[in-house]
Image (cartoon, rainbow, N blue to C red):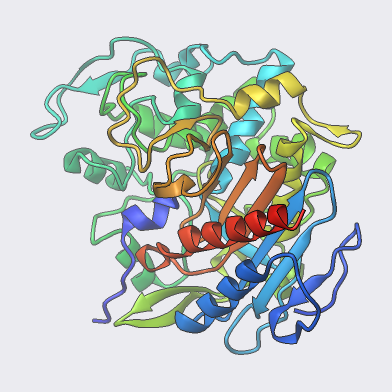
Length: 443
């Protein structure tokens, strides 16, 4: 059987050409056609080299300062065979880059007064009124009452004590998989999906976010709420909190309160058939070779079981840049304000509970509304980013952040699932800041 180098931890962790013109007048730069000087030579060289050495059909980035027009850097195309030129509207699977979107959706409701950070989610979701915690994690699923309630803050920051299908203890991992709480979608190919599950027994997925929450609540927590940072399915539960607090389905809330006001017309849980020409292929390593595991005729064109708040979105470089522009604008792009400046700043600040155990974090950092807050420590998911930068990555190699020190928004896109993409984000980040330093030196 082919050995697919795709494991659940790296799938879900994520940490997370041509001359078409965007609104705002920023051209897509085709690296093979560049002749004029550029402000991002190191970044362009990195993208071009990376897609050739893996190999991948394409790589892309979007970079902008303040509210200025975006520079799009595109190397290659959307697929090895029959691929289209990459552009601002090319659609990528962003996986865990969904998490900051869900986090900021919750902050909109905080701004509305419909939620508070330290509100017990059991007030909205009865199934979470009396959470239970593993009593002997290594040996059984026996549980005791939790020391306190799960709050909105806990869900935003992965400190609710919730498990994940990629996070020990093993008994809880297995129970999560058996309950169908795997999250997201990968491929129509059963072999790919089986490999992503690591051979575990996977139950039928829930048919609603409400059912997802109820199934999750039937399982014990791995730690008391507020005690430990542990990557989790908390953003899926937060999506249910949002739809109950808002009184409308989660995906409708995103569309009406975020996507439409910000001009994000190519961001979906289900990509419309009319946009198949904008889709990329997705890849993984099989027996040491890069192969297509989800083509442009993608599983993302099928209705998903639910709108997964932790990893279900596909989006374009243009659209995610609009999201980042809103963050850099502290809740607004021009007259399109979706939350107050105060609330936006709060959502991008360190919201971790006091004295939380950070030993399970992928890198030293703070944590805000679904994304990491860089501390300036040059390791892990925020490597090279100045302190205070906010963002997260996705399992196929995508990355995005806002950098307030340099008044800059940055995102990058490839489609290579799992551990083989581990060198993309640090290499890309280093290239961006090499160019930033050179720009500063040039005055």
